[in-house]
Length: 88
Image (cartoon, rainbow, N blue to C red; front, side, top):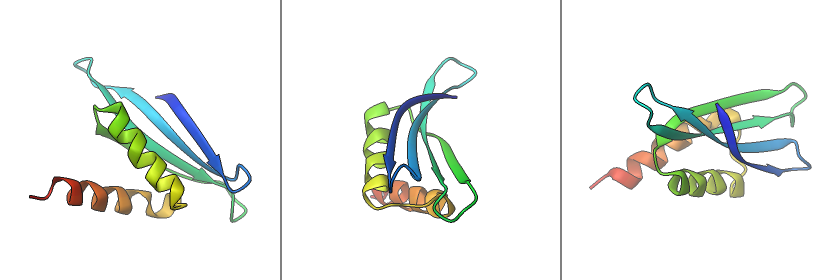
């Protein structure tokens, strides 16, 4: 996992990372990791391989950061976002 971009908010206690992973066939996939120490102990969650489009994944990461999404809800919100985006 490679960190492509990092955004810190809430006095650096809520951190969003755009991450890069490589599939076995060499394709690059992008995901998002969120970590926080807002509640004492560190909490972290990741959703890997959201898209092969870095810019699209970065836009989602910024939307999550703008709305202070916590690690505990990262997966659910990401799934809802993707479902809404791809629903016809």
